[in-house]
Image (cartoon, rainbow, N blue to C red; front, top):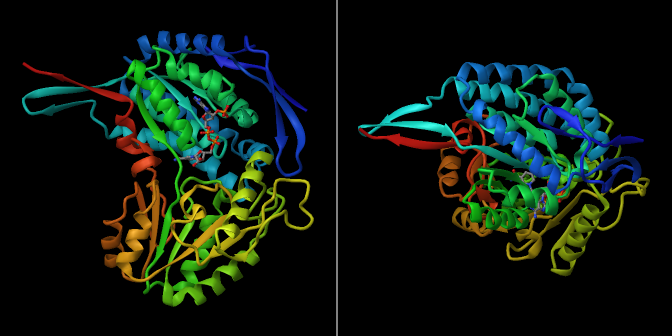
Length: 471
Ligand code: NDP
Protein backbone atom coordinates (compact mmCIF):
# COMPACT_ATOMS: atom_id res chain seq x y z
CA UNK A 1 0.00 0.00 0.00
CA UNK A 2 1.48 3.32 -1.11
CA UNK A 3 0.90 6.38 1.07
CA UNK A 4 1.55 9.74 -0.51
CA UNK A 5 1.31 12.32 2.22
CA UNK A 6 3.54 15.12 1.06
CA UNK A 7 3.29 17.90 -1.44
CA UNK A 8 6.13 20.01 -2.83
CA UNK A 9 6.48 23.65 -1.83
CA UNK A 10 9.45 26.01 -1.96
CA UNK A 11 12.06 23.41 -2.80
CA UNK A 12 11.01 20.72 -0.35
CA UNK A 13 8.54 17.93 0.27
CA UNK A 14 6.19 19.09 3.06
CA UNK A 15 3.20 17.71 4.90
CA UNK A 16 0.08 19.43 3.61
CA UNK A 17 -2.24 21.44 5.83
CA UNK A 18 -5.13 19.58 4.15
CA UNK A 19 -6.07 16.26 5.74
CA UNK A 20 -8.61 14.77 3.32
CA UNK A 21 -7.47 11.55 1.67
CA UNK A 22 -8.22 10.01 -1.71
CA UNK A 23 -7.97 6.31 -2.59
CA UNK A 24 -5.75 5.21 -5.44
CA UNK A 25 -7.27 2.26 -7.30
CA UNK A 26 -5.67 -0.05 -9.86
CA UNK A 27 -8.17 0.13 -12.75
CA UNK A 28 -7.21 -3.32 -14.04
CA UNK A 29 -8.68 -5.03 -10.95
CA UNK A 30 -10.26 -2.25 -8.86
CA UNK A 31 -8.04 -3.08 -5.88
CA UNK A 32 -6.94 -0.24 -3.65
CA UNK A 33 -3.20 0.35 -4.15
CA UNK A 34 -2.69 3.46 -2.10
CA UNK A 35 -3.87 6.68 -0.61
CA UNK A 36 -2.97 10.31 -1.17
CA UNK A 37 -3.44 13.20 1.24
CA UNK A 38 -4.92 16.19 -0.53
CA UNK A 39 -3.75 19.75 -0.19
CA UNK A 40 -6.23 22.54 0.51
CA UNK A 41 -6.56 26.29 -0.11
CA UNK A 42 -3.92 27.11 2.49
CA UNK A 43 -1.43 24.77 0.80
CA UNK A 44 -2.23 26.30 -2.57
CA UNK A 45 -1.70 29.81 -1.24
CA UNK A 46 1.66 28.77 0.24
CA UNK A 47 2.69 27.28 -3.12
CA UNK A 48 1.64 30.42 -4.96
CA UNK A 49 3.52 32.68 -2.59
CA UNK A 50 6.67 30.57 -2.97
CA UNK A 51 6.38 30.79 -6.77
CA UNK A 52 5.78 34.54 -6.53
CA UNK A 53 8.95 35.04 -4.49
CA UNK A 54 10.99 32.84 -6.84
CA UNK A 55 9.73 34.76 -9.87
CA UNK A 56 11.60 37.87 -8.72
CA UNK A 57 14.94 36.27 -9.55
CA UNK A 58 13.98 33.48 -11.95
CA UNK A 59 12.40 35.94 -14.38
CA UNK A 60 15.81 37.62 -14.69
CA UNK A 61 17.73 34.45 -15.59
CA UNK A 62 19.51 34.29 -18.94
CA UNK A 63 18.73 31.95 -21.79
CA UNK A 64 21.87 29.94 -20.95
CA UNK A 65 20.83 29.54 -17.30
CA UNK A 66 17.37 28.31 -18.31
CA UNK A 67 18.88 25.90 -20.82
CA UNK A 68 21.11 24.53 -18.06
CA UNK A 69 18.08 23.95 -15.80
CA UNK A 70 16.18 22.26 -18.62
CA UNK A 71 19.18 20.00 -19.25
CA UNK A 72 19.25 19.02 -15.56
CA UNK A 73 15.53 18.25 -15.65
CA UNK A 74 16.01 16.17 -18.79
CA UNK A 75 18.73 14.10 -17.13
CA UNK A 76 16.79 13.64 -13.88
CA UNK A 77 13.57 12.54 -15.60
CA UNK A 78 15.40 10.29 -18.10
CA UNK A 79 17.04 8.37 -15.23
CA UNK A 80 13.68 7.10 -14.01
CA UNK A 81 12.13 6.34 -17.38
CA UNK A 82 11.34 2.70 -16.58
CA UNK A 83 9.72 3.43 -13.21
CA UNK A 84 7.70 6.28 -14.71
CA UNK A 85 6.19 3.93 -17.29
CA UNK A 86 5.56 1.15 -14.75
CA UNK A 87 3.72 3.39 -12.32
CA UNK A 88 1.63 4.85 -15.14
CA UNK A 89 0.52 1.36 -16.18
CA UNK A 90 -0.41 0.43 -12.62
CA UNK A 91 -2.13 3.61 -11.55
CA UNK A 92 -3.76 4.67 -14.79
CA UNK A 93 -4.18 1.43 -16.77
CA UNK A 94 -2.51 2.73 -19.92
CA UNK A 95 -0.97 -0.04 -21.98
CA UNK A 96 2.76 -0.63 -21.66
CA UNK A 97 3.17 0.39 -25.33
CA UNK A 98 1.37 3.67 -24.75
CA UNK A 99 2.96 4.46 -21.39
CA UNK A 100 6.49 3.96 -22.73
CA UNK A 101 5.71 6.40 -25.53
CA UNK A 102 4.07 8.84 -23.15
CA UNK A 103 7.13 8.84 -20.86
CA UNK A 104 9.33 9.41 -23.91
CA UNK A 105 7.20 12.46 -24.71
CA UNK A 106 7.58 13.70 -21.14
CA UNK A 107 11.36 13.34 -21.35
CA UNK A 108 11.63 14.97 -24.76
CA UNK A 109 9.59 17.97 -23.56
CA UNK A 110 12.79 19.33 -22.03
CA UNK A 111 14.94 18.88 -25.15
CA UNK A 112 12.19 20.37 -27.29
CA UNK A 113 12.01 23.41 -25.00
CA UNK A 114 15.81 23.77 -25.19
CA UNK A 115 15.67 23.73 -28.98
CA UNK A 116 12.88 26.33 -29.02
CA UNK A 117 14.73 28.52 -26.55
CA UNK A 118 18.01 28.41 -28.46
CA UNK A 119 16.33 29.82 -31.55
CA UNK A 120 14.09 32.36 -29.82
CA UNK A 121 14.80 36.09 -29.63
CA UNK A 122 13.44 37.74 -26.50
CA UNK A 123 14.02 41.12 -28.08
CA UNK A 124 12.84 42.05 -31.55
CA UNK A 125 12.40 45.21 -33.58
CA UNK A 126 8.89 45.96 -34.77
CA UNK A 127 8.33 49.21 -36.68
CA UNK A 128 10.70 51.68 -35.01
CA UNK A 129 10.32 50.06 -31.63
CA UNK A 130 12.03 47.47 -29.54
CA UNK A 131 9.75 44.70 -28.34
CA UNK A 132 10.87 42.81 -25.25
CA UNK A 133 9.16 39.49 -24.61
CA UNK A 134 8.90 39.27 -20.83
CA UNK A 135 7.89 36.33 -18.63
CA UNK A 136 4.39 37.06 -17.42
CA UNK A 137 4.56 35.81 -13.85
CA UNK A 138 3.47 32.73 -11.90
CA UNK A 139 1.79 30.10 -14.07
CA UNK A 140 -0.85 27.75 -12.69
CA UNK A 141 -0.68 24.36 -14.38
CA UNK A 142 -3.75 22.12 -14.11
CA UNK A 143 -3.68 18.69 -15.77
CA UNK A 144 -5.88 15.58 -16.24
CA UNK A 145 -5.17 11.90 -15.63
CA UNK A 146 -4.79 10.61 -19.16
CA UNK A 147 -1.10 11.36 -19.73
CA UNK A 148 -0.38 13.17 -16.51
CA UNK A 149 3.38 13.50 -16.54
CA UNK A 150 3.50 14.26 -20.26
CA UNK A 151 1.31 17.30 -19.69
CA UNK A 152 3.15 18.34 -16.53
CA UNK A 153 6.57 18.14 -18.22
CA UNK A 154 5.51 19.96 -21.40
CA UNK A 155 3.94 22.82 -19.47
CA UNK A 156 6.75 23.09 -16.90
CA UNK A 157 9.46 22.99 -19.59
CA UNK A 158 7.79 25.80 -21.52
CA UNK A 159 7.25 27.91 -18.39
CA UNK A 160 10.92 27.54 -17.44
CA UNK A 161 12.03 28.43 -20.96
CA UNK A 162 9.99 31.62 -20.64
CA UNK A 163 11.30 32.48 -17.15
CA UNK A 164 8.01 31.85 -15.36
CA UNK A 165 7.61 30.03 -12.05
CA UNK A 166 4.84 27.51 -11.50
CA UNK A 167 2.24 25.91 -9.25
CA UNK A 168 1.23 22.53 -10.59
CA UNK A 169 -2.04 20.75 -9.77
CA UNK A 170 -2.19 17.33 -11.41
CA UNK A 171 -5.20 15.03 -11.16
CA UNK A 172 -5.30 13.37 -7.72
CA UNK A 173 -5.87 10.09 -9.55
CA UNK A 174 -2.28 10.42 -10.80
CA UNK A 175 -0.70 10.86 -7.35
CA UNK A 176 1.91 8.10 -7.70
CA UNK A 177 3.03 9.43 -11.06
CA UNK A 178 3.15 12.91 -9.55
CA UNK A 179 5.26 11.72 -6.62
CA UNK A 180 7.82 10.17 -8.95
CA UNK A 181 8.07 13.18 -11.25
CA UNK A 182 8.34 15.50 -8.23
CA UNK A 183 11.33 13.45 -7.05
CA UNK A 184 12.92 13.84 -10.49
CA UNK A 185 12.33 17.60 -10.54
CA UNK A 186 13.71 17.87 -6.99
CA UNK A 187 16.86 16.02 -8.02
CA UNK A 188 17.39 18.49 -10.87
CA UNK A 189 18.20 21.13 -8.22
CA UNK A 190 16.22 24.11 -9.51
CA UNK A 191 16.06 27.27 -7.38
CA UNK A 192 13.46 27.08 -4.61
CA UNK A 193 9.93 27.96 -5.66
CA UNK A 194 10.38 27.61 -9.42
CA UNK A 195 8.04 24.66 -9.34
CA UNK A 196 5.56 23.75 -6.61
CA UNK A 197 3.21 20.78 -6.75
CA UNK A 198 -0.05 20.50 -4.83
CA UNK A 199 -2.11 17.31 -5.00
CA UNK A 200 -5.72 18.19 -4.44
CA UNK A 201 -9.15 18.35 -5.93
CA UNK A 202 -10.17 20.66 -8.74
CA UNK A 203 -12.86 22.49 -6.82
CA UNK A 204 -10.44 23.36 -3.99
CA UNK A 205 -6.85 23.58 -5.29
CA UNK A 206 -7.85 24.26 -8.92
CA UNK A 207 -10.36 26.89 -7.84
CA UNK A 208 -7.78 28.70 -5.67
CA UNK A 209 -5.32 28.77 -8.59
CA UNK A 210 -8.10 30.17 -10.78
CA UNK A 211 -9.05 32.99 -8.44
CA UNK A 212 -5.73 33.91 -6.78
CA UNK A 213 -4.52 37.34 -7.96
CA UNK A 214 -0.87 36.24 -7.82
CA UNK A 215 -1.37 33.73 -10.63
CA UNK A 216 -0.78 35.49 -13.96
CA UNK A 217 -1.58 32.63 -16.30
CA UNK A 218 -3.26 29.24 -16.30
CA UNK A 219 -2.29 26.43 -18.62
CA UNK A 220 -5.04 23.84 -18.40
CA UNK A 221 -5.58 20.51 -20.11
CA UNK A 222 -8.87 18.77 -19.47
CA UNK A 223 -12.53 18.76 -20.31
CA UNK A 224 -14.29 21.59 -22.11
CA UNK A 225 -16.74 22.02 -19.23
CA UNK A 226 -14.00 22.60 -16.63
CA UNK A 227 -12.06 24.75 -19.14
CA UNK A 228 -15.05 27.09 -19.35
CA UNK A 229 -15.27 27.32 -15.55
CA UNK A 230 -11.58 28.22 -15.37
CA UNK A 231 -11.84 30.80 -18.16
CA UNK A 232 -14.81 32.48 -16.43
CA UNK A 233 -13.01 32.53 -13.08
CA UNK A 234 -9.74 33.73 -14.58
CA UNK A 235 -11.24 36.83 -16.14
CA UNK A 236 -11.77 38.56 -12.76
CA UNK A 237 -8.00 38.96 -12.37
CA UNK A 238 -7.40 39.08 -16.15
CA UNK A 239 -5.29 35.93 -16.14
CA UNK A 240 -3.99 34.71 -19.45
CA UNK A 241 -5.35 31.25 -20.24
CA UNK A 242 -4.23 28.42 -22.44
CA UNK A 243 -6.92 25.77 -22.62
CA UNK A 244 -6.37 22.36 -24.21
CA UNK A 245 -9.80 20.76 -24.18
CA UNK A 246 -11.79 17.94 -25.70
CA UNK A 247 -12.19 16.75 -29.25
CA UNK A 248 -14.27 14.63 -31.62
CA UNK A 249 -11.77 14.47 -34.40
CA UNK A 250 -12.81 13.50 -37.94
CA UNK A 251 -10.76 11.01 -39.92
CA UNK A 252 -11.60 11.53 -43.61
CA UNK A 253 -10.88 8.59 -45.85
CA UNK A 254 -10.88 10.03 -49.38
CA UNK A 255 -12.08 7.78 -52.20
CA UNK A 256 -8.52 7.30 -53.54
CA UNK A 257 -7.12 6.06 -50.19
CA UNK A 258 -5.66 2.60 -49.77
CA UNK A 259 -8.36 1.14 -47.53
CA UNK A 260 -6.41 -1.89 -46.41
CA UNK A 261 -3.87 0.47 -44.83
CA UNK A 262 -6.09 3.38 -43.83
CA UNK A 263 -8.88 1.47 -42.07
CA UNK A 264 -6.76 -0.62 -39.64
CA UNK A 265 -4.81 2.56 -38.86
CA UNK A 266 -8.10 4.39 -38.24
CA UNK A 267 -9.29 1.72 -35.80
CA UNK A 268 -6.01 1.61 -33.87
CA UNK A 269 -5.97 5.42 -33.83
CA UNK A 270 -9.45 5.61 -32.32
CA UNK A 271 -8.37 3.18 -29.60
CA UNK A 272 -5.13 5.04 -28.74
CA UNK A 273 -4.60 5.39 -25.00
CA UNK A 274 -7.57 3.03 -24.45
CA UNK A 275 -9.69 5.59 -26.32
CA UNK A 276 -8.95 8.17 -23.62
CA UNK A 277 -7.15 10.61 -25.90
CA UNK A 278 -8.37 14.07 -26.80
CA UNK A 279 -6.82 13.81 -30.28
CA UNK A 280 -8.19 10.33 -31.05
CA UNK A 281 -9.78 10.14 -34.52
CA UNK A 282 -13.18 9.02 -33.27
CA UNK A 283 -15.33 9.94 -36.28
CA UNK A 284 -14.41 7.88 -39.35
CA UNK A 285 -15.80 9.53 -42.50
CA UNK A 286 -15.91 7.17 -45.49
CA UNK A 287 -17.33 7.33 -49.05
CA UNK A 288 -20.82 5.79 -48.96
CA UNK A 289 -19.95 3.64 -51.98
CA UNK A 290 -17.18 1.99 -49.94
CA UNK A 291 -19.09 1.56 -46.69
CA UNK A 292 -19.44 -2.24 -46.94
CA UNK A 293 -15.76 -2.72 -47.62
CA UNK A 294 -14.84 -0.34 -44.77
CA UNK A 295 -17.21 -2.13 -42.37
CA UNK A 296 -15.59 -5.45 -43.18
CA UNK A 297 -12.04 -4.17 -42.67
CA UNK A 298 -12.92 -2.23 -39.50
CA UNK A 299 -14.71 -5.19 -37.94
CA UNK A 300 -11.87 -7.54 -38.75
CA UNK A 301 -9.34 -5.13 -37.20
CA UNK A 302 -11.36 -4.51 -34.02
CA UNK A 303 -11.87 -8.23 -33.46
CA UNK A 304 -8.09 -8.71 -33.44
CA UNK A 305 -7.49 -5.93 -30.89
CA UNK A 306 -6.19 -7.40 -27.65
CA UNK A 307 -8.00 -6.05 -24.59
CA UNK A 308 -6.68 -6.86 -21.14
CA UNK A 309 -3.69 -6.66 -18.84
CA UNK A 310 -2.06 -3.34 -19.72
CA UNK A 311 1.31 -4.76 -18.66
CA UNK A 312 1.44 -7.22 -21.53
CA UNK A 313 3.44 -5.91 -24.46
CA UNK A 314 0.81 -6.73 -27.12
CA UNK A 315 -2.22 -5.30 -25.29
CA UNK A 316 -3.84 -2.52 -27.32
CA UNK A 317 -6.73 -1.59 -25.01
CA UNK A 318 -6.38 -1.59 -21.23
CA UNK A 319 -9.01 -0.62 -18.65
CA UNK A 320 -10.77 2.73 -18.37
CA UNK A 321 -9.14 4.87 -15.68
CA UNK A 322 -12.04 4.57 -13.21
CA UNK A 323 -15.40 2.92 -12.68
CA UNK A 324 -16.99 6.31 -13.35
CA UNK A 325 -15.27 6.50 -16.74
CA UNK A 326 -16.31 2.89 -17.47
CA UNK A 327 -19.95 3.74 -16.72
CA UNK A 328 -19.75 6.86 -18.88
CA UNK A 329 -18.51 4.83 -21.87
CA UNK A 330 -21.19 2.18 -21.28
CA UNK A 331 -23.88 4.85 -21.31
CA UNK A 332 -22.71 6.00 -24.75
CA UNK A 333 -22.68 2.44 -26.12
CA UNK A 334 -26.28 2.08 -24.94
CA UNK A 335 -27.17 5.49 -26.38
CA UNK A 336 -25.73 4.65 -29.82
CA UNK A 337 -28.09 1.69 -30.09
CA UNK A 338 -31.05 3.78 -28.91
CA UNK A 339 -30.19 6.44 -31.50
CA UNK A 340 -30.44 3.82 -34.27
CA UNK A 341 -26.77 3.40 -35.18
CA UNK A 342 -25.71 -0.11 -36.28
CA UNK A 343 -23.48 -1.88 -33.76
CA UNK A 344 -20.75 -3.41 -35.92
CA UNK A 345 -18.58 -4.89 -33.18
CA UNK A 346 -18.26 -4.76 -29.38
CA UNK A 347 -21.18 -3.48 -27.34
CA UNK A 348 -22.21 -3.16 -23.71
CA UNK A 349 -20.60 -5.06 -20.83
CA UNK A 350 -17.13 -6.31 -20.04
CA UNK A 351 -15.12 -8.70 -22.22
CA UNK A 352 -15.23 -12.27 -20.90
CA UNK A 353 -12.65 -12.98 -18.20
CA UNK A 354 -12.03 -9.28 -17.50
CA UNK A 355 -14.93 -8.67 -15.13
CA UNK A 356 -12.80 -7.32 -12.25
CA UNK A 357 -11.37 -4.28 -14.02
CA UNK A 358 -12.87 -1.33 -15.92
CA UNK A 359 -12.55 -3.02 -19.31
CA UNK A 360 -14.70 -2.03 -22.27
CA UNK A 361 -15.22 -4.06 -25.46
CA UNK A 362 -13.59 -2.28 -28.41
CA UNK A 363 -16.71 -0.99 -30.10
CA UNK A 364 -17.61 0.33 -33.54
CA UNK A 365 -20.90 1.83 -34.68
CA UNK A 366 -21.59 2.19 -38.39
CA UNK A 367 -24.26 3.94 -40.48
CA UNK A 368 -23.96 6.76 -37.97
CA UNK A 369 -25.46 10.18 -38.74
CA UNK A 370 -23.35 13.14 -37.70
CA UNK A 371 -26.22 14.66 -35.72
CA UNK A 372 -26.37 11.66 -33.36
CA UNK A 373 -24.97 12.33 -29.90
CA UNK A 374 -22.44 9.51 -30.31
CA UNK A 375 -21.03 11.50 -33.27
CA UNK A 376 -21.09 14.86 -31.50
CA UNK A 377 -20.03 14.16 -27.92
CA UNK A 378 -16.64 13.09 -26.65
CA UNK A 379 -16.99 9.53 -25.32
CA UNK A 380 -13.36 9.09 -24.13
CA UNK A 381 -13.31 5.32 -24.53
CA UNK A 382 -12.65 2.76 -27.29
CA UNK A 383 -15.73 3.61 -29.35
CA UNK A 384 -15.42 4.51 -33.04
CA UNK A 385 -18.28 5.81 -35.19
CA UNK A 386 -18.33 5.33 -38.97
CA UNK A 387 -20.18 8.02 -40.91
CA UNK A 388 -20.78 7.65 -44.67
CA UNK A 389 -20.45 10.71 -46.93
CA UNK A 390 -21.58 11.38 -50.52
CA UNK A 391 -18.66 13.35 -51.97
CA UNK A 392 -15.61 15.37 -50.93
CA UNK A 393 -17.59 18.55 -50.21
CA UNK A 394 -20.02 16.55 -48.05
CA UNK A 395 -17.06 15.02 -46.15
CA UNK A 396 -15.69 18.49 -45.39
CA UNK A 397 -19.09 19.73 -44.22
CA UNK A 398 -19.53 16.73 -41.90
CA UNK A 399 -15.96 17.04 -40.59
CA UNK A 400 -16.58 20.68 -39.63
CA UNK A 401 -20.06 20.09 -38.24
CA UNK A 402 -18.91 19.82 -34.62
CA UNK A 403 -18.40 22.16 -31.70
CA UNK A 404 -14.83 20.82 -31.41
CA UNK A 405 -11.77 21.52 -33.56
CA UNK A 406 -8.73 19.92 -31.96
CA UNK A 407 -7.43 17.53 -34.62
CA UNK A 408 -8.37 15.99 -37.96
CA UNK A 409 -6.94 13.22 -40.13
CA UNK A 410 -7.02 12.65 -43.89
CA UNK A 411 -6.05 9.57 -45.89
CA UNK A 412 -5.48 9.85 -49.63
CA UNK A 413 -3.05 8.56 -52.23
CA UNK A 414 -2.86 12.12 -53.60
CA UNK A 415 -0.91 14.36 -51.21
CA UNK A 416 -1.89 17.61 -52.93
CA UNK A 417 -5.55 16.70 -52.80
CA UNK A 418 -5.21 15.84 -49.11
CA UNK A 419 -3.60 19.24 -48.46
CA UNK A 420 -6.43 21.00 -50.34
CA UNK A 421 -8.93 19.25 -48.10
CA UNK A 422 -6.81 19.99 -45.01
CA UNK A 423 -6.99 23.71 -45.81
CA UNK A 424 -10.80 23.53 -45.47
CA UNK A 425 -10.90 21.75 -42.10
CA UNK A 426 -11.45 23.75 -38.90
CA UNK A 427 -8.96 22.06 -36.59
CA UNK A 428 -5.71 22.98 -34.86
CA UNK A 429 -3.85 20.02 -36.34
CA UNK A 430 -4.56 18.09 -39.53
CA UNK A 431 -2.49 14.94 -40.07
CA UNK A 432 -2.17 13.37 -43.48
CA UNK A 433 -1.81 9.60 -43.92
CA UNK A 434 -1.17 8.55 -40.36
CA UNK A 435 -0.03 10.06 -37.09
CA UNK A 436 3.18 12.00 -37.75
CA UNK A 437 4.85 13.53 -34.70
CA UNK A 438 6.27 17.06 -34.65
CA UNK A 439 6.95 18.46 -31.17
CA UNK A 440 7.67 21.94 -32.58
CA UNK A 441 4.34 22.25 -34.39
CA UNK A 442 1.64 24.18 -32.50
CA UNK A 443 -0.87 22.08 -30.60
CA UNK A 444 -4.32 23.28 -29.59
CA UNK A 445 -7.84 23.63 -30.78
CA UNK A 446 -10.24 25.67 -32.87
CA UNK A 447 -13.71 26.36 -31.47
CA UNK A 448 -14.59 24.66 -28.16
CA UNK A 449 -11.42 22.56 -28.20
CA UNK A 450 -9.63 25.41 -26.51
CA UNK A 451 -7.81 28.70 -26.53
CA UNK A 452 -4.16 29.18 -27.46
CA UNK A 453 -1.45 26.77 -28.49
CA UNK A 454 1.26 24.71 -26.82
CA UNK A 455 4.66 23.45 -28.07
CA UNK A 456 7.44 25.26 -29.87
CA UNK A 457 7.45 29.01 -30.39
CA UNK A 458 3.65 29.27 -30.27
CA UNK A 459 3.64 27.61 -26.87
CA UNK A 460 6.53 29.70 -25.52
CA UNK A 461 4.88 32.98 -26.49
CA UNK A 462 1.83 32.16 -24.36
CA UNK A 463 4.05 32.52 -21.26
CA UNK A 464 5.39 35.90 -22.39
CA UNK A 465 4.07 39.46 -22.51
CA UNK A 466 5.31 41.67 -25.33
CA UNK A 467 6.51 45.06 -24.06
CA UNK A 468 7.08 47.70 -26.74
CA UNK A 469 9.72 50.33 -26.04
CA UNK A 470 9.16 53.38 -28.22
CA UNK A 471 11.60 56.23 -28.61
P1 NDP B 1 -11.35 17.42 -16.04
O1 NDP B 1 -11.57 18.61 -16.87
O2 NDP B 1 -12.44 16.92 -15.18
O3 NDP B 1 -10.09 17.62 -15.06
C1 NDP B 1 -8.88 18.15 -15.49
C2 NDP B 1 -8.17 18.81 -14.32
O4 NDP B 1 -8.93 19.95 -13.90
C3 NDP B 1 -8.06 17.92 -13.09
O5 NDP B 1 -6.83 18.16 -12.46
C4 NDP B 1 -9.22 18.39 -12.25
O6 NDP B 1 -9.11 18.11 -10.88
C5 NDP B 1 -9.20 19.88 -12.50
N1 NDP B 1 -10.44 20.55 -12.17
C6 NDP B 1 -11.69 20.03 -12.07
N2 NDP B 1 -12.58 20.98 -11.72
C7 NDP B 1 -11.89 22.13 -11.61
C8 NDP B 1 -12.24 23.48 -11.29
N3 NDP B 1 -13.50 23.83 -11.01
N4 NDP B 1 -11.28 24.42 -11.26
C9 NDP B 1 -10.00 24.11 -11.56
N5 NDP B 1 -9.60 22.85 -11.85
C10 NDP B 1 -10.53 21.88 -11.90
O7 NDP B 1 -10.87 16.34 -17.08
P2 NDP B 1 -10.53 14.83 -16.82
O8 NDP B 1 -9.55 14.72 -15.76
O9 NDP B 1 -11.82 14.10 -16.65
O10 NDP B 1 -9.82 14.47 -18.22
C11 NDP B 1 -10.49 14.12 -19.35
C12 NDP B 1 -10.80 15.30 -20.23
O11 NDP B 1 -9.62 16.00 -20.59
C13 NDP B 1 -11.41 14.89 -21.54
O12 NDP B 1 -12.58 15.61 -21.79
C14 NDP B 1 -10.37 15.23 -22.60
O13 NDP B 1 -10.82 15.59 -23.85
C15 NDP B 1 -9.62 16.32 -21.98
N6 NDP B 1 -8.25 16.30 -22.47
C16 NDP B 1 -7.83 17.26 -23.36
C17 NDP B 1 -6.56 17.22 -23.88
C18 NDP B 1 -6.07 18.28 -24.80
O14 NDP B 1 -4.87 18.45 -24.90
N7 NDP B 1 -6.91 19.00 -25.49
C19 NDP B 1 -5.64 16.15 -23.55
C20 NDP B 1 -6.17 15.22 -22.61
C21 NDP B 1 -7.42 15.32 -22.09
P3 NDP B 1 -9.87 16.83 -10.26
O15 NDP B 1 -9.04 15.68 -10.71
O16 NDP B 1 -9.88 17.03 -8.81
O17 NDP B 1 -11.26 16.85 -10.86
